[in-house]
Length: 474
Image (cartoon, rainbow, N blue to C red; front, top):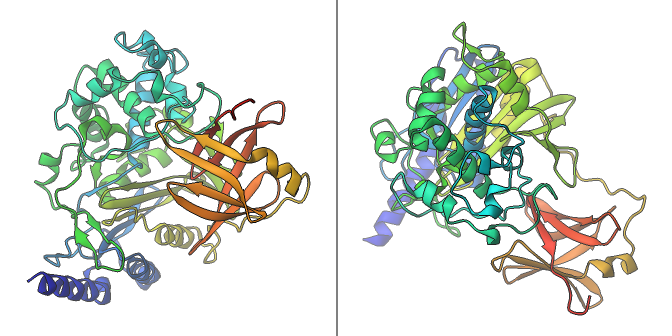
C-alpha cells in the first residue's frame, strides 16, 4: 500500500510539471510576452521538486499577469490558482514592520526609544532594545524559528515576557544579524499598542485597509479559502504533504502570514505608488520611506537592510525585496520601486521561493536581458587579503549561544569549517573571507569581522553573525 501511494504521488508530480502551463490563469492579460515566465516557473519547480507556484507581475498600479503553475496538493492534483493562499515565511516581516512603523508615525511609540517605555512587564535585558534595532536585525538577539508551539493568542506575549538575557548573543547595535525573535517582539509591540491580539491587529490596521481580503494569520480562517498545502521533499523522494501542518502562534509576526499572490500585489502596488491603491491613500508615504531606507549594512556585500526589507542594486536597478522560508512553503517579493515594477512568487515546498522565476519576471517587466538581476559572482579583493599566517588569528569557535556554535580549525595544513557535526574545507578568499564547502550553488562565503582593534570578533554566514568565544587564557 505504501509503495502504491508513493508511485501515485510520483505520477501526479510528473503530470503536474508536464501540464503545469495548462493550469496558468491570468488576472488581466495572457499573451506570448509572458509565456517564458510560465516556462521558467515550470523548470524551477522541476529543479527544486516543488509541486506548485503562484505568480503575479505588477507594472505601475495594476497586476499585468498572474498565473498558477503546477499543483496545490500532490495528493489530489488540484491545480494552483493565483488567488490561492500560501503561508509566506519571512516575507511576513515587511508586514509586521509596516504595522509598527505606521503606529510610530501616528505618535504611538518612538522607534528609537527602549521598548520598555511601551511594554512594562519585560525583563530589563529585553526592555532596553529599541524598535529600530528589532526591525533592522541589530538588537543582538540570537536566531531561532520553532515551527510547532502553542495555539492560543496569549502565546506571543507569554513567549516575549519569558525572554531573558540569554536571548542575546551580543550587545544591541553591535552588528547586523538576522533574528526571527526580534520580529516576535515587534509583533507584540503592535499587539500591545493596538490593544488586540496580533492577528486581529494586523487585520484591522493593514489587511482590511489594503483590501487584502483573504490574508490572515489564523489557520482556521485560511482553510475556509482555497489553500495550497505545504510540502516537503526528503532525500530523493517525491514531495509529500506535511502532516500535521506546522503552527506556532508565538512566532507568527516573523513568518506565518497566509496570503495569495493577488493579495500581496495590493500591498506591493500601494508600496510603489506612494501609499495609494484604487485611487485612495492607505499608507503614509513617510512609512514607505522609513521601511525602504537603509538602516544597517549587511556584512560582506553591498546590500543593506531597511525595516523588514533587504535593499540592493543589480543591473543598475535599485531593488527592495524579501524572501521567505518555513515548513512547507517559500516566497519571494521583488520590487523595483523607482520603475514601479514587481514580481511576487509563492511556492508550496519548504524553502522554495522560486527566486529565479521572480528575477526573470522582473527583468521582463523592466526590459532587461536575461540574468541582469542575478547576483554577481563574488570577486576576490586582492588588497589587504588574508595570508596563511593572518588566518591563524581566526582559528577558534564562534557562537550565537544555546549550543549554536561554528568553528574554524586547521586540519592537514589547511583550514576547515565545522558546524553541526559537519566539516567542510575553507579557502581564503580576498579580504576577510572564507569560501566554505562546494555546494551545488558553489561555496558559501563566511565573512570575518574584526573589532575596532583588528582582532577577530565575529564570523558572519547565512545572514547570521556568530560571536567569538574567548579562548582559555586569552
